[in-house]
Image (cartoon, rainbow, N blue to C red):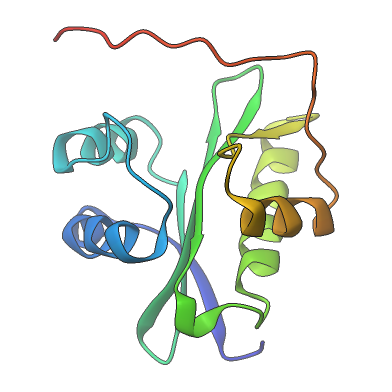
Length: 141
């Protein structure tokens, strides 16, 4: 794992990240476009963490902190880099970021049907909260 480098994404990474998510992530959301990710980086430049190995994007996680809660989104590892410590390293970096910001608990958005992700999150010490459901409403710009 010593050849793995974790860094914050820069605006120049947007197209690479969006293409990566189409290949490595489960589905997309309404804000998975250039404008949405650019707004994320404008608001919180350290929130999108990238894992690179040998100059290639191996994984991502969004570690967003709103001043109150720590939210994890878009943990994705390229199929060719799975089971090699990428997700573990990304989550460790995210948790270090949260601790430095004063965060006390991380929560993750995980698709119900993504069994592979359930195993990864569980191995990292996360567990679902069965009493909660996510309620959403798309907003018009």
